[in-house]
Image 1 (cartoon, rainbow, N blue to C red):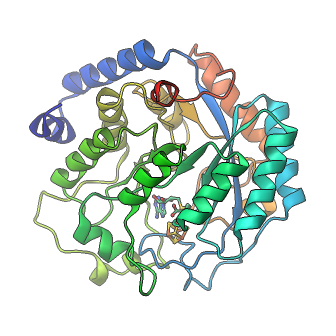
Image 2 (image 1 turned 180 degrees about the horizontal axis):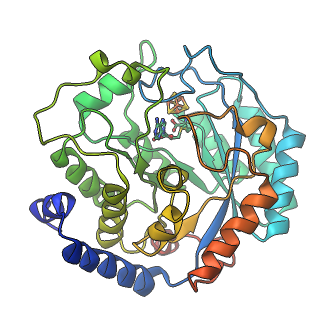
Length: 348
Ligand code: SAM
Ligand code: SF4
Protein backbone atom coordinates (compact mmCIF):
# COMPACT_ATOMS: atom_id res chain seq x y z
CA UNK A 1 0.00 0.00 0.00
CA UNK A 2 1.26 3.46 -0.90
CA UNK A 3 1.87 6.05 1.82
CA UNK A 4 -0.93 8.30 0.48
CA UNK A 5 -3.43 5.45 0.48
CA UNK A 6 -2.63 4.64 4.13
CA UNK A 7 -3.02 8.34 4.96
CA UNK A 8 -6.40 8.51 3.22
CA UNK A 9 -7.68 5.53 5.22
CA UNK A 10 -6.39 7.00 8.49
CA UNK A 11 -8.36 10.19 7.82
CA UNK A 12 -11.46 8.44 6.41
CA UNK A 13 -14.73 9.27 8.18
CA UNK A 14 -17.32 7.89 5.74
CA UNK A 15 -19.00 4.90 7.41
CA UNK A 16 -19.69 3.01 4.18
CA UNK A 17 -16.04 3.35 3.10
CA UNK A 18 -14.88 2.23 6.54
CA UNK A 19 -17.18 -0.79 6.35
CA UNK A 20 -15.27 -1.68 3.18
CA UNK A 21 -11.94 -1.42 5.06
CA UNK A 22 -13.23 -3.70 7.85
CA UNK A 23 -14.46 -6.22 5.24
CA UNK A 24 -11.13 -6.27 3.37
CA UNK A 25 -9.16 -6.71 6.63
CA UNK A 26 -11.44 -9.53 7.84
CA UNK A 27 -11.21 -11.37 4.52
CA UNK A 28 -7.41 -10.98 4.45
CA UNK A 29 -7.18 -12.34 8.00
CA UNK A 30 -9.34 -15.35 7.05
CA UNK A 31 -7.36 -16.04 3.87
CA UNK A 32 -3.88 -15.83 5.41
CA UNK A 33 -4.16 -16.91 9.06
CA UNK A 34 -7.62 -18.55 9.16
CA UNK A 35 -10.43 -18.37 11.68
CA UNK A 36 -8.52 -19.50 14.78
CA UNK A 37 -8.02 -17.02 17.62
CA UNK A 38 -4.79 -17.79 19.49
CA UNK A 39 -4.69 -17.29 23.25
CA UNK A 40 -1.49 -15.99 24.80
CA UNK A 41 -1.50 -16.07 28.60
CA UNK A 42 -0.05 -12.81 29.91
CA UNK A 43 2.00 -12.81 33.13
CA UNK A 44 2.95 -9.31 34.31
CA UNK A 45 5.66 -10.59 36.61
CA UNK A 46 7.30 -7.33 37.77
CA UNK A 47 6.41 -3.66 37.69
CA UNK A 48 9.89 -2.39 38.64
CA UNK A 49 11.30 -0.20 35.90
CA UNK A 50 14.43 1.90 35.51
CA UNK A 51 13.12 3.90 32.54
CA UNK A 52 11.56 7.35 32.27
CA UNK A 53 9.04 6.84 29.45
CA UNK A 54 6.87 9.96 29.45
CA UNK A 55 3.67 7.98 28.85
CA UNK A 56 3.85 5.05 31.26
CA UNK A 57 2.75 4.70 34.88
CA UNK A 58 5.51 2.15 35.62
CA UNK A 59 8.27 4.73 34.97
CA UNK A 60 10.93 4.80 37.72
CA UNK A 61 10.05 8.19 39.26
CA UNK A 62 6.38 7.28 39.84
CA UNK A 63 6.47 6.80 43.62
CA UNK A 64 2.68 6.51 43.81
CA UNK A 65 2.94 2.88 42.73
CA UNK A 66 3.36 -0.20 44.95
CA UNK A 67 6.18 -2.21 43.34
CA UNK A 68 6.22 -6.03 43.15
CA UNK A 69 8.26 -8.82 41.62
CA UNK A 70 6.73 -12.31 41.48
CA UNK A 71 8.75 -15.32 42.64
CA UNK A 72 9.67 -18.12 40.26
CA UNK A 73 7.15 -20.44 41.98
CA UNK A 74 4.36 -17.86 41.67
CA UNK A 75 5.14 -17.45 37.97
CA UNK A 76 5.23 -21.24 37.47
CA UNK A 77 1.77 -21.41 39.09
CA UNK A 78 0.46 -19.09 36.34
CA UNK A 79 2.34 -21.05 33.66
CA UNK A 80 0.68 -24.29 34.79
CA UNK A 81 -2.71 -22.58 34.63
CA UNK A 82 -1.96 -21.50 31.03
CA UNK A 83 -1.16 -25.10 30.09
CA UNK A 84 -4.31 -26.35 31.87
CA UNK A 85 -6.49 -23.79 30.01
CA UNK A 86 -5.02 -25.09 26.72
CA UNK A 87 -3.16 -21.92 25.75
CA UNK A 88 -0.26 -22.24 23.31
CA UNK A 89 1.93 -19.44 24.69
CA UNK A 90 2.87 -17.58 27.83
CA UNK A 91 4.00 -13.97 27.60
CA UNK A 92 6.38 -12.89 30.38
CA UNK A 93 6.09 -9.11 30.63
CA UNK A 94 7.62 -6.56 33.01
CA UNK A 95 9.07 -3.11 33.36
CA UNK A 96 12.75 -2.80 32.50
CA UNK A 97 13.72 -4.41 35.77
CA UNK A 98 17.39 -4.77 36.67
CA UNK A 99 16.31 -7.27 39.34
CA UNK A 100 15.54 -9.65 36.44
CA UNK A 101 19.03 -11.05 36.05
CA UNK A 102 20.21 -12.97 33.01
CA UNK A 103 20.53 -16.23 34.92
CA UNK A 104 17.25 -15.93 36.79
CA UNK A 105 15.33 -15.61 33.52
CA UNK A 106 17.40 -18.39 31.92
CA UNK A 107 16.34 -20.67 34.80
CA UNK A 108 12.67 -19.71 34.49
CA UNK A 109 12.54 -20.17 30.70
CA UNK A 110 14.30 -23.55 30.99
CA UNK A 111 11.80 -24.72 33.62
CA UNK A 112 8.80 -23.64 31.51
CA UNK A 113 10.20 -25.42 28.45
CA UNK A 114 11.03 -28.55 30.48
CA UNK A 115 7.60 -28.81 32.12
CA UNK A 116 5.20 -27.61 29.41
CA UNK A 117 4.81 -27.52 25.60
CA UNK A 118 4.21 -23.74 25.73
CA UNK A 119 5.89 -21.19 23.50
CA UNK A 120 7.55 -18.46 25.57
CA UNK A 121 7.34 -14.79 24.62
CA UNK A 122 9.49 -12.27 26.46
CA UNK A 123 8.60 -8.58 26.80
CA UNK A 124 11.05 -7.19 29.32
CA UNK A 125 12.37 -4.08 27.55
CA UNK A 126 15.78 -3.14 26.18
CA UNK A 127 18.50 -5.53 27.31
CA UNK A 128 21.98 -6.51 26.16
CA UNK A 129 22.62 -8.82 23.23
CA UNK A 130 24.21 -11.25 25.72
CA UNK A 131 20.91 -11.44 27.61
CA UNK A 132 18.92 -11.95 24.39
CA UNK A 133 21.33 -14.70 23.34
CA UNK A 134 21.21 -16.48 26.73
CA UNK A 135 17.38 -16.39 26.88
CA UNK A 136 17.09 -17.64 23.30
CA UNK A 137 19.51 -20.49 24.08
CA UNK A 138 17.37 -21.35 27.12
CA UNK A 139 14.38 -21.77 24.79
CA UNK A 140 12.60 -18.39 24.56
CA UNK A 141 10.72 -18.28 21.26
CA UNK A 142 9.51 -14.72 20.75
CA UNK A 143 10.29 -11.15 21.82
CA UNK A 144 7.89 -8.19 21.98
CA UNK A 145 9.37 -4.71 21.85
CA UNK A 146 7.23 -1.89 20.52
CA UNK A 147 9.19 0.80 18.66
CA UNK A 148 6.39 3.15 19.92
CA UNK A 149 6.77 5.67 17.06
CA UNK A 150 8.87 5.84 13.89
CA UNK A 151 9.33 9.61 14.41
CA UNK A 152 12.84 9.73 15.90
CA UNK A 153 12.45 13.22 17.41
CA UNK A 154 9.20 12.26 19.12
CA UNK A 155 10.69 8.94 20.27
CA UNK A 156 13.66 10.67 21.91
CA UNK A 157 11.36 13.09 23.71
CA UNK A 158 8.92 10.48 24.99
CA UNK A 159 11.38 7.62 25.56
CA UNK A 160 14.62 9.05 26.96
CA UNK A 161 17.61 6.69 26.79
CA UNK A 162 19.41 5.42 29.87
CA UNK A 163 22.35 7.66 30.72
CA UNK A 164 25.24 7.13 28.29
CA UNK A 165 23.28 4.74 26.07
CA UNK A 166 21.35 5.23 22.85
CA UNK A 167 17.92 3.66 22.57
CA UNK A 168 17.31 2.14 19.14
CA UNK A 169 14.49 -0.35 19.33
CA UNK A 170 14.35 -0.84 15.55
CA UNK A 171 17.99 -1.97 15.45
CA UNK A 172 17.34 -4.15 18.51
CA UNK A 173 14.41 -5.87 16.78
CA UNK A 174 16.61 -6.75 13.80
CA UNK A 175 19.22 -8.25 16.13
CA UNK A 176 16.51 -10.25 17.93
CA UNK A 177 15.38 -11.65 14.60
CA UNK A 178 18.96 -12.59 13.72
CA UNK A 179 19.14 -14.50 17.01
CA UNK A 180 16.16 -16.58 15.86
CA UNK A 181 13.31 -14.99 17.80
CA UNK A 182 9.89 -14.33 16.29
CA UNK A 183 9.73 -10.55 16.62
CA UNK A 184 6.77 -8.43 17.63
CA UNK A 185 6.49 -4.69 17.73
CA UNK A 186 3.96 -1.90 17.46
CA UNK A 187 2.95 1.57 18.50
CA UNK A 188 0.54 3.51 20.66
CA UNK A 189 -2.15 5.30 18.69
CA UNK A 190 -2.80 8.96 19.44
CA UNK A 191 0.20 9.66 21.64
CA UNK A 192 0.62 13.46 21.91
CA UNK A 193 2.83 14.70 19.06
CA UNK A 194 1.97 11.81 16.69
CA UNK A 195 0.85 13.09 13.26
CA UNK A 196 -1.13 11.16 10.64
CA UNK A 197 2.02 11.13 8.55
CA UNK A 198 3.97 9.54 11.46
CA UNK A 199 1.32 6.86 11.90
CA UNK A 200 1.29 6.03 8.17
CA UNK A 201 5.08 5.73 8.36
CA UNK A 202 4.73 3.43 11.42
CA UNK A 203 2.59 1.05 9.35
CA UNK A 204 5.17 1.14 6.55
CA UNK A 205 7.84 0.24 9.11
CA UNK A 206 5.79 -2.82 10.18
CA UNK A 207 6.20 -4.03 6.58
CA UNK A 208 9.91 -3.14 6.34
CA UNK A 209 10.64 -5.04 9.55
CA UNK A 210 8.53 -8.02 8.35
CA UNK A 211 7.08 -8.30 11.85
CA UNK A 212 5.76 -11.65 13.03
CA UNK A 213 3.51 -9.96 15.62
CA UNK A 214 2.00 -6.46 15.58
CA UNK A 215 0.58 -5.00 18.81
CA UNK A 216 -1.20 -1.67 18.54
CA UNK A 217 -3.47 0.03 21.03
CA UNK A 218 -4.71 3.49 21.94
CA UNK A 219 -2.53 5.74 24.07
CA UNK A 220 -4.31 6.27 27.43
CA UNK A 221 -3.30 9.18 29.61
CA UNK A 222 -1.72 8.53 33.00
CA UNK A 223 -1.88 11.71 35.13
CA UNK A 224 1.33 10.88 37.07
CA UNK A 225 3.55 11.05 34.00
CA UNK A 226 5.13 13.96 32.09
CA UNK A 227 2.39 13.66 29.43
CA UNK A 228 -0.12 14.31 32.20
CA UNK A 229 1.17 17.91 32.13
CA UNK A 230 -0.24 19.83 29.11
CA UNK A 231 2.92 21.97 28.99
CA UNK A 232 5.06 18.90 28.34
CA UNK A 233 3.04 17.74 25.33
CA UNK A 234 4.77 18.33 21.98
CA UNK A 235 3.32 21.21 19.90
CA UNK A 236 1.69 20.07 16.70
CA UNK A 237 -0.17 21.76 13.81
CA UNK A 238 -3.93 21.82 14.15
CA UNK A 239 -5.58 18.90 12.40
CA UNK A 240 -2.38 16.85 12.41
CA UNK A 241 -2.66 15.15 15.83
CA UNK A 242 -3.90 11.54 15.59
CA UNK A 243 -6.78 10.89 18.04
CA UNK A 244 -6.30 8.00 20.48
CA UNK A 245 -9.84 6.79 19.89
CA UNK A 246 -11.51 3.51 19.13
CA UNK A 247 -12.14 3.97 15.43
CA UNK A 248 -8.53 5.01 14.73
CA UNK A 249 -7.36 1.89 16.59
CA UNK A 250 -9.58 -0.31 14.39
CA UNK A 251 -8.22 1.45 11.30
CA UNK A 252 -4.62 0.70 12.35
CA UNK A 253 -5.45 -2.95 13.12
CA UNK A 254 -7.14 -3.28 9.71
CA UNK A 255 -4.31 -1.52 7.83
CA UNK A 256 -1.69 -3.60 9.67
CA UNK A 257 -3.54 -6.75 8.54
CA UNK A 258 -3.67 -5.56 4.92
CA UNK A 259 0.01 -4.53 4.99
CA UNK A 260 1.26 -7.67 6.83
CA UNK A 261 -1.29 -10.40 5.98
CA UNK A 262 0.40 -13.26 7.84
CA UNK A 263 1.30 -11.44 11.09
CA UNK A 264 -0.24 -12.36 14.42
CA UNK A 265 -2.22 -9.31 15.58
CA UNK A 266 -3.80 -9.11 19.05
CA UNK A 267 -6.98 -7.31 19.99
CA UNK A 268 -5.45 -5.51 22.99
CA UNK A 269 -6.40 -4.72 26.59
CA UNK A 270 -6.01 -0.99 25.86
CA UNK A 271 -8.73 -1.33 23.21
CA UNK A 272 -10.94 -3.20 25.70
CA UNK A 273 -10.31 -0.32 28.12
CA UNK A 274 -11.87 2.11 25.62
CA UNK A 275 -14.83 -0.19 24.92
CA UNK A 276 -15.31 -2.91 27.56
CA UNK A 277 -18.51 -4.21 25.96
CA UNK A 278 -17.33 -5.00 22.44
CA UNK A 279 -13.84 -3.54 21.80
CA UNK A 280 -12.08 -6.90 21.73
CA UNK A 281 -14.70 -8.46 19.43
CA UNK A 282 -14.57 -5.53 17.00
CA UNK A 283 -10.78 -5.82 16.89
CA UNK A 284 -11.15 -9.52 16.05
CA UNK A 285 -13.52 -8.89 13.12
CA UNK A 286 -11.39 -6.03 11.77
CA UNK A 287 -8.10 -7.87 11.33
CA UNK A 288 -6.95 -9.26 14.71
CA UNK A 289 -6.43 -13.00 15.39
CA UNK A 290 -4.97 -13.11 18.92
CA UNK A 291 -6.15 -12.29 22.46
CA UNK A 292 -4.04 -12.18 25.60
CA UNK A 293 -5.96 -13.38 28.67
CA UNK A 294 -4.33 -12.05 31.82
CA UNK A 295 -2.96 -14.69 34.22
CA UNK A 296 -1.37 -12.24 36.68
CA UNK A 297 -2.73 -12.87 40.20
CA UNK A 298 -5.25 -10.11 41.11
CA UNK A 299 -3.15 -8.98 44.11
CA UNK A 300 -0.38 -8.00 41.68
CA UNK A 301 -2.29 -6.98 38.57
CA UNK A 302 -3.86 -3.94 40.28
CA UNK A 303 -0.30 -2.59 40.59
CA UNK A 304 0.63 -3.10 36.93
CA UNK A 305 -0.91 0.27 36.27
CA UNK A 306 0.50 1.45 32.93
CA UNK A 307 -2.57 3.71 32.70
CA UNK A 308 -5.60 4.09 35.00
CA UNK A 309 -8.86 2.10 34.76
CA UNK A 310 -7.26 -0.76 32.83
CA UNK A 311 -9.77 -3.37 31.65
CA UNK A 312 -10.14 -6.61 33.67
CA UNK A 313 -8.02 -5.31 36.56
CA UNK A 314 -10.05 -7.15 39.21
CA UNK A 315 -10.58 -10.40 37.28
CA UNK A 316 -8.98 -13.72 38.13
CA UNK A 317 -7.20 -15.90 35.56
CA UNK A 318 -10.27 -18.20 35.52
CA UNK A 319 -12.55 -15.18 34.98
CA UNK A 320 -10.47 -13.87 32.06
CA UNK A 321 -10.29 -17.31 30.51
CA UNK A 322 -14.06 -17.90 30.69
CA UNK A 323 -14.91 -14.40 29.46
CA UNK A 324 -12.54 -14.41 26.48
CA UNK A 325 -13.40 -17.97 25.47
CA UNK A 326 -17.08 -17.06 25.41
CA UNK A 327 -16.43 -13.86 23.41
CA UNK A 328 -14.48 -15.81 20.77
CA UNK A 329 -17.18 -18.46 20.49
CA UNK A 330 -19.90 -15.80 20.18
CA UNK A 331 -18.14 -14.58 17.01
CA UNK A 332 -18.30 -18.09 15.55
CA UNK A 333 -14.49 -18.30 15.61
CA UNK A 334 -12.50 -21.28 16.88
CA UNK A 335 -10.01 -21.25 19.75
CA UNK A 336 -6.49 -21.66 18.43
CA UNK A 337 -4.77 -24.98 18.94
CA UNK A 338 -1.02 -25.40 19.28
CA UNK A 339 1.52 -22.59 19.62
CA UNK A 340 0.15 -20.35 16.87
CA UNK A 341 3.53 -19.52 15.35
CA UNK A 342 3.57 -16.89 12.64
CA UNK A 343 3.65 -18.41 9.12
CA UNK A 344 6.42 -15.92 8.20
CA UNK A 345 8.59 -17.39 10.95
CA UNK A 346 7.84 -20.95 9.85
CA UNK A 347 9.03 -20.00 6.33
CA UNK A 348 12.25 -18.47 7.71
N1 SAM B 1 8.82 -2.50 29.65
C1 SAM B 1 8.59 -3.20 28.45
C2 SAM B 1 8.66 -2.27 27.27
O1 SAM B 1 8.58 -1.06 27.46
O2 SAM B 1 8.78 -2.79 26.16
C3 SAM B 1 7.28 -3.97 28.42
C4 SAM B 1 6.18 -3.44 29.26
S1 SAM B 1 5.50 -1.89 28.67
C5 SAM B 1 4.35 -1.53 29.93
C6 SAM B 1 4.46 -2.47 27.33
C7 SAM B 1 3.85 -1.41 26.44
O3 SAM B 1 2.89 -0.65 27.17
C8 SAM B 1 4.78 -0.35 25.91
O4 SAM B 1 5.52 -0.81 24.80
C9 SAM B 1 3.81 0.79 25.54
O5 SAM B 1 3.50 0.78 24.15
C10 SAM B 1 2.55 0.45 26.35
N2 SAM B 1 2.13 1.60 27.18
C11 SAM B 1 2.85 2.22 28.12
N3 SAM B 1 2.16 3.28 28.62
C12 SAM B 1 0.98 3.33 27.95
C13 SAM B 1 -0.15 4.21 28.00
N4 SAM B 1 -0.19 5.24 28.83
N5 SAM B 1 -1.18 3.94 27.15
C14 SAM B 1 -1.15 2.88 26.33
N6 SAM B 1 -0.11 2.02 26.25
C15 SAM B 1 0.94 2.24 27.04
FE1 SF4 C 1 9.20 0.95 31.77
FE2 SF4 C 1 8.16 -0.23 29.56
FE3 SF4 C 1 6.75 1.56 31.01
FE4 SF4 C 1 8.82 2.41 29.57
S1 SF4 C 1 6.91 1.46 28.78
S2 SF4 C 1 8.34 2.99 31.70
S3 SF4 C 1 10.20 0.68 29.78
S4 SF4 C 1 7.41 -0.43 31.67
